[in-house]
Amino acid sequence: MYLEEIGALSVVAFDKTGTLTEGKPQVTDIVPIDGIPDKEFLSIASAIESRSEHPLAEAIVKSAKEHGAEISSISAFETIPGKGARATIQGKNYQIGNLRLFTEQAIDAKRVEDEISRLQNEGKTVMVLGDDERIFGLISVADVLRENSGQAINKLKKAGIKKVIMLTGDNESTAHAIATKAGVDDFRADLLPEDKVDAIKKLLVKYGKVAMVGDGVNDAPAMAVSTVGIAMGAAGTDTALETADIALMADDLTKLAYAVKLSRKTLGIIKQNIALALIIKGLILLMVVPGWLTLWLAVAGDMGSSLLVTLNGMRLLRVKHED
Image (tube, rainbow, N blue to C red):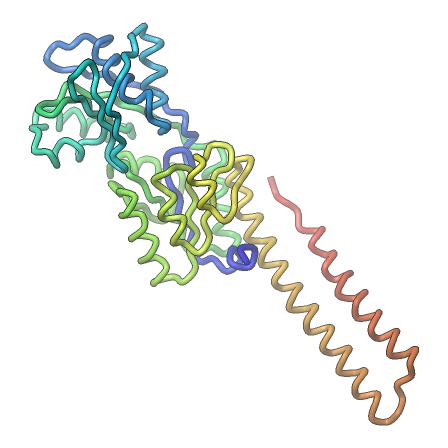
């Protein structure tokens, strides 16, 4: 079923982090405010992120270790999908995530807005750290585009995909920078998991057949409603892999275009085989009327049709993956 569906796709939607990008971001800027030392700042941030599976969290924990910051034990950890996470450290509540996490709680962000804009315009993802009342500072993280992302998107377009779109929870500026580098036709930024679902539903109404390619928990709902859900096999979370219809075990995005081409070739050969079988059976039936059909001719016709469709099907062996 999914082999057939992938050949009929009109649109492919990609997640950004861990899909179009390597998913191995590095901390580039630590901007504490109110005089908080870098180590203390990183210690709080890494303590919360130590419970998260997101690639950005791994980058913060790694940076904390490199700076010699102590990762404290936490309690009451809570993930907030599409926004960030909260935790209690030594009896005090802290939270880290995007700016929306804080503005929705009416926490003043005016003093960091300019710095956030500057970092985002450089194509960086900015994480805000604070408590229930104020912001302590910022951590910016930069991810690298996968080496073959641009090549994969070009191949998809050559294979007949009408539109390639990027869906991400990142801010507009960072999303625009990555989208431009990758060569996608369009992008949607600042999306929560439910926003990605809505985006896929709208694409389905407009284009009919849409695939969602992702790697994380946030992508799973969108993958579930898409025509074909495709997960990054090695980098993907268990939730994404369980939800997906197809998994790219080598995380090679160029395999998508190959799958589309193979599917369309397979469907073409199936139609050819049906036509061949019907024509041969029809000829055999026509030979019955004048009495020309013998037992041996009927056997030869039946075996011949089987051999023809088998040999025609073997043409699929010639469909190669282009590096």
